Image 1: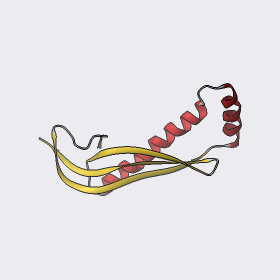
Image 2: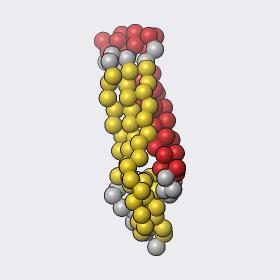
Image 3: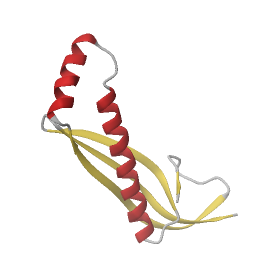
Image 4: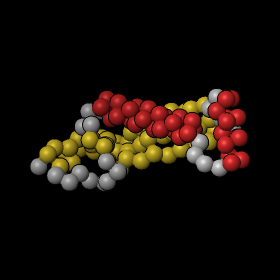
Length: 106
């Protein structure tokens, strides 16, 4: 699956736009990582546990996005983006989205 943040695919012709596609996951931080993050925030620096959780969440959201695009018959996703938001004090929503297209090499 070709996935790009651009609105076109250089070297490809977009034959058909199949519509919006989304990949969504909601992650919960465990109590241990919350306590550790709280203590770390007092000293400053990277919250490695949180960084790892978000990286894994993005990968999972992107996998779901690509699965949805494939189910529509797409071979590429253009205008790919991520969005995140906090749900309550311990949940993070991660959404990957873009436009599913069928493209062919010129």
